[in-house]
Structure formats: structure tokens, C-alpha cells
Amino acid sequence: MQATLVHRGRIRSAKRIPAMGDWRWLHRSLQRSQQVRWFAAPAGIAPLNKPVVVSEETLTEPVVVSDVAPVAAKSVAKAAAGPAYIVLAGISFSHFLNDTMQSLIASVYPILKDTYALDFAQIGMITLAFQFTASLLQPVVGYYTDKKAQPYSLAIGMTSTFFGLLLLSAAHQYLVILVAAALVGLGSAVFHPESARIARLASGGRYGFAQSVFQLGGSFGTSMGPVLAALIVVPFGQGSIAWFSSIAFLAIVILWRIGRWYEPQIKAKKTAVAQAHPDAPSPRRVAVALAVLVALLFSKQLYVSSLSSYYIFYLIDRFGMSTQAAQIYLFIFLAANAVGAFFGGPLGDRFGRKIVIWISIVGALPFTRALPYAGLAGSAVLSVIIGLIISSTTSSIIVFAQELVPHRFGMISGVFFGVAFGIGGLGAAVLGKLADYTSIEFVYQVCAYLPAIGLLAVFLPKLPQHAR
Image 1 (spheres, rainbow, N blue to C red):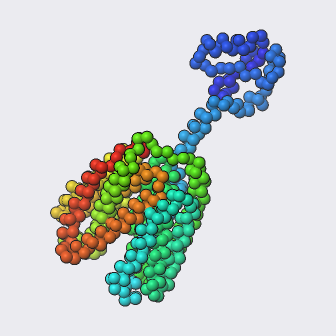
Image 2 (image 1 turned 90 degrees about the horizontal axis):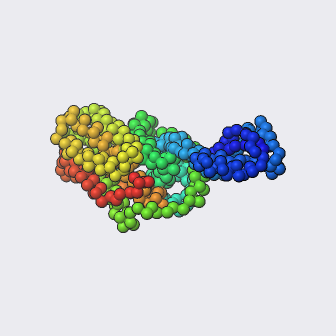
């Protein structure tokens, strides 16, 4: 008898073996060698005393072995694992476009104030209309999409921003301005929770890296809004705001394509049942940890807001610098802030997010304490160091919170992107009032202690190894 010998799913050779006692011969062969998994594979059910001819076509056909298939499938899945870089780039670029349009609102306040003779209280109401929808609605949107994911909600939300910009460019009444600001804020509220979820889905397990790429787009977008307003809106007036609607339209197209990628991901996740890890912290510890993370992000955001809002005035007041020169120093700090935000996520993936949180917040404390007493050159160096260190914690804090409540990614992202950042903005306004009653230097002496709130990180639980 001639039989095909198959080893781990591949045909090795064809040998002539005795026709009589074939299976006994096979049994003795297996007993002699337990390490080699050879077996006789008669082709068909022809009589055993007839030779089996193996043709060239047969040799080229795939051989399917049931116990090998799962191993091969697992190997293919492992090889395919990794971040979806195109999706990450698209969602980060969309974040850049969204935050560029979002920061445009505050940049056109001087034009609106002069054109319609608005007082500061009315300007504050525009901010409230924008912040209420942009910040406070984010947890609500996230809670809803946690229950029923909406793959095309990002494009629909950006459509709200599109119409908000068009309305703001043509608004000639104060109430219309409020509605336009609220529409732009609504688009931002819809964007952040779901886009953070998509960044995590596209991470390939590198959650901190994906969150850093996502944050990088937002950081550059925030810095570009005032620049574009100075180059376009100030020279050409309120009507030129309509030109920025083309940015919103581009974002709609990108987000629609991302929604097509997102839709099958939703269907795949519906079949998976989330189960709590046996080493996961208790619900009470999770609640305490979330409160601590909100406090940490608040302290970080409040300090960054104080530098972003008042650093120029601080340099002018203390060192007598010109406005243009002070803006260069502010740009240096913002650039360091963006770089730190990008590298913080991968460091959290590599060394653990709790370690990065400790180092990034508490580690900045000596430098923030030294800043009010440094000279001009020292202030520039310290601002770079502070920006690099303190901004590296954002991605780790958000990913840590997502892993504490893995079934509420949207709501958690909404809380941290919306409420925590919104509270930080309100805190910056309080610091402005404090500067009016005291001095800008006193404000920086007070803010120097804000990173000390990072000591609350001692109450953060240890996450299971799969979450780190």
C-alpha cells in the first residue's frame, strides 16, 4: 500500500508500506516515537491491498487538519494585531479640525464685542452657551452611546458645527449668536466621547499610544484657532467665519468614512460579553479612584489654563516684555505641552499608567514652585520642563479611568473631556478675579502648589495586569 504521510498539516512524502497489518504497523510506529506525529492517511475507502496514487494535483491541494486550524487562525490574528494607523490618523486629524473651530469662538469675541456693543456679561453668556453644550452634555452623549452605539454620530455632530459656523458668520442679533455658539458646542459634545472610543478600538492594545495620538490633534487644533482668527477673521470681518465651514465639511467626510469602519466593530462587540476581571477593584474603590482622577486632571488643567491665559501678562508685568515677545514664550510652553501629551501615552503603555501619573503631576511640583522666583531665561527653561512633565499625564488619566469602568467608555470619556476640562476653565476665570484683587505674580505663587494635589494618586487602586 502507498500512503501519504502528513506532518502538522503538510504532506511530507509518499512511501510504500506493507499491505497486511497496516494499522498495526502504524500503532507500533507511534509507540516507538511519541514526539513525531506521523499518521497514515489512506485516500478514500479503496481496498487496502490496492496502491493509492498521489497525483501532482493532489500534492498541490491544501490539506486541512482539524487540530491545526485553530493554531493557524490564532497565528494569523496575532500577525494582524496592531493599531489601525489610518483610523488613528483620521480621528486625530478630525480632533484637530474640531478643536480649531471650537477655539475660534473665543477668538472672535473682540469682533463681536465691538460690532454689537456687547458688555462682558453678554460675552460671558456666549461662553456659557458654548461651554454648556460642549462640556456638560458630553457625559450625557457618552452615556447614550454606551447603550446604543451610533457609528455615524460623529459626522452628524460635525454637521451641527457646520451650521453653527454658518449661522455665526451671518448673525446680526445677540440671540442668534447664542444659538450659533450652542450649535458649535453641541458638535464638540458629540465628537469627543465617541471619538475617544474609536481611538481605543483602533489602538491594537496600545491604549495610551492611541489616546496620545488623539490628544495631539486636539492640542494643535486649540493652538491654531487664535492664529487663523488673527489671519482671516480680524482682517476680513465676521462674514469670513463662513470660510471655516469648509473645515467642518472636510471633517464630516472623514468622520463618515471612519463611521463605515466603526460599524462592523460595533457588530463584533455585540457578541462579546464583558466580564469583570477577578482582580478588579471593588465598586467603592472604583468610585474613589474616579474622584481622584477627576481631581488630578482638574489640577493639571487648571495650572495649564493659568499659563495659557495669564503667562503673557505675567511676563509683561514682571520683565517688561513686549506682547509679541511674550507670545513667543507662550508658544514655547504650548509646544512643550503638546510634545509631553504625545509621549505620555506610550510611556504609560510601557511602564504602567499609575507610575506616569505619579511622575507627571508630583514630578512637576519642584519646577512649578521655582517658576515664580526664576529670571527670564530660567522662566523659559522651567516652562518647557513643566509643559513636558505635567501634560504627559492626560492620556494616562483618561485610559486609567476607562479601564476602571470598561463598560462605560463613552460616559467616562465625556466626564473627563467635558466636565473636568470645563471646571478647569471656570477655575481659570476665578484665578483672573484673584489677579484683579491681588497681582498676577501672587496668582502664580498660588498655582505653584496645584501639582501637590497629585499626592491623591496614593488612593488609586492597582489594576489587573491586562489593564496595567
